[in-house]
View 1 (cartoon, rainbow, N blue to C red):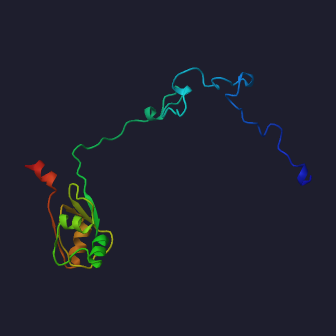
View 2: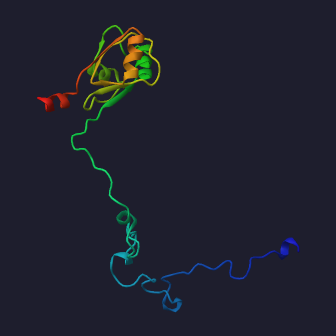
View 3: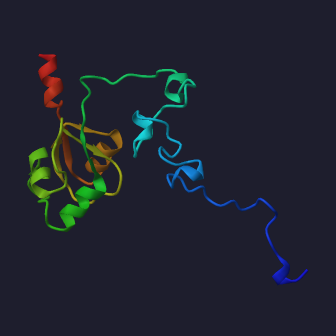
Length: 161
């Protein structure tokens, strides 16, 4: 067999059916879409509709719930704090509050409070006062010679009263 003798098997390539090209084509006028209705219009994909078969979202069981009074914390890692101290954007000698973190640009907004997590290293001795902190973060800050005050979030304190 030579290169010029190569060809596809019969029926391997079929020409695309050109729809809406006159009555002689067999797919003229409505182009096989039927008459009127949602699916005759352009840009329609009925999400979740499986042609009458029970759709996937109804075959699967319902799970879980959303806690209505969930607290959402702004997360700050120790590595971030150290980077901002090194850059001179955060004063290590002054008390570092949640408002100071927002002002320095460490976080955008404090949400229901700021929670400090232990990712990264801290060398600066910071005096932090935040709404939450992990045990590892507290240990790391105290090991670096700093102090951390963990207060309850404002929302939680209001609910307790």
